Length: 87
Image 1 (tube, rainbow, N blue to C red):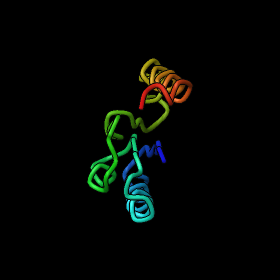
Image 2 (image 1 turned 180 degrees about the horizontal axis):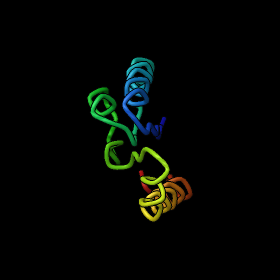
Image 3 (image 1 turned 60 degrees about the horizontal axis):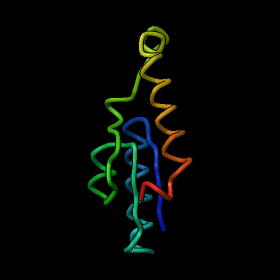
């Protein structure tokens, strides 16, 4: 089975890592890609984006980084449309 997990900050990275560990206990052949952090990577996911590179806090920070955020959303859309072609 193939999984794609997205976490946008440290607590999501922690919970995502626990989910990845549980998935891999049930299916050692699972393929897991993630937007997350070091914990998710250490748990066995292939890290596509680190949350430190994509997390923005506060209204001004979000407005300032709106082009980046919209680009990340576009990137997600591209990933999930042809997902069978990318793996």
